[in-house]
Amino acid sequence: WGLAVRAFAQPAPAADCASRIVSVDHAQAELRPDGLPAIQAEVTLAHRWDLAYPGRGGSVTYHAQLQTPCVPDQPMALMIAKVGNQAAVRVNGALVAQLGELGNPTYDAAKAAQLVVVPATLLRRDGLNELSIDATLQRQRAGGLSMILYGPQAAMNAVALDQFRWRFVGPLVI
Image (cartoon, rainbow, N blue to C red; front, side):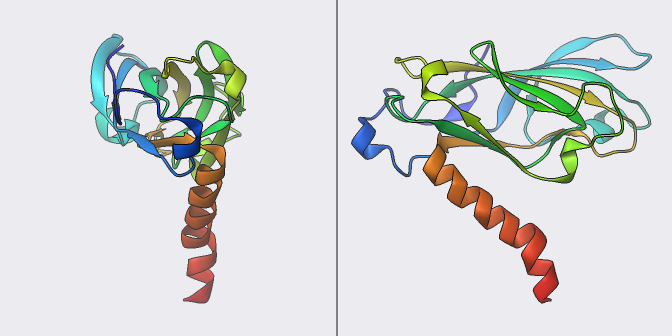
């Protein structure tokens, strides 16, 4: 799978890691729209399923490499502003998040940002890690996948709090 991150070549020492965040803005995708042949393509994130396949549901698997920005001796996290409608997130083949049951339209992960913790024990010491996201999408529900932010859990907690404030608290003030 193609490298889809903006980062540096070698992981930094743990002491330099506290605020390093990388973004994933491209992914290889296996797109399976209902009633159409499956295709494989590179997609730019944010990928909007409803724009690519108006009026159709389906499923997709996104693949990208995560360049861990430091030696993985602490938990990392993924900040996914929008995914789904339902999704399973894997890092190096291990399930790190199940967002609803794939194909079950009663759950919609796309309604809120998702902070997904990645335990340090799952990460490779060389810094190259494989991200795979399986998603099912229902028509007219604005499914797909946003750009992904990836970094140390402590830094990503701050990003998640900031997004929460803008999405949910900000409108209450106005």
